[in-house]
Structure formats: structure tokens, C-alpha cells
Length: 136
Image (spheres, rainbow, N blue to C red):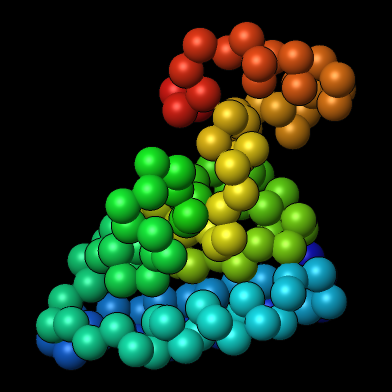
């Protein structure tokens, strides 16, 4: 996205791997408390190696035993751009195509990336009858 409000902040995690991690958010749209919390949780991670985004997900998630995910993930740039424009914070990890997004809300578990391109009423209807929303 080409927008001066898109903010990218980089840090390094993993004592041995020195993996670059970048958080992205839209200033003025993303909740600053969420952005600060993401930074705090990432800075608290002390581990030898970060090889992919799943490592980070385990450290920062709110409810690891909940059946509902609190952290979203995607490999699709258009889906991630939409989430950032909705106020989510994205977490990129060098060397992995999967990008995390926080916070994840329940309805996102029922969505597919194609829902962003459909009319709202039709997309809502499809979410109700869709057999398996995780296959997108």
C-alpha cells in the first residue's frame, strides 16, 4: 500500500538466528494500545532461534487453550492489506511467507479472502453456508 500513514517498525529476535521481524500498521486507524502491546510482547521474547512466524505466535497469543484463534495468519497480500486497513497490526518474519495479524476477531474465522470482493449481503450468506472456511 502506498500511504504515508503505513508504519513499519523492525526489530531483531532470536539470540542465535538474529531474525528480522517487522510490524506494520496504519497510524490513525490501528489502536495505539494494541500496537504498544504487540511491541512489548515481541520485545519480551527470549529464544535462541526464530525460524518462522509460528514461533512468535506461540509466545504472544492471549489464550493458547482456546478453540478460537486470537492471532490470524495469511499468505495473501490483498487479505493482509485489508486487515491493516481495518486496524489490525501485521507481524512479518524474515524467511517465512506467513504473516500474522492481531487482534483476530471471531468472524474472521468464518471468512475467506474472496469475501472482500463480494457484495456484503452475499458474502454474509456465503459465510453461513460455507462448508469449510479454512480452505482459502
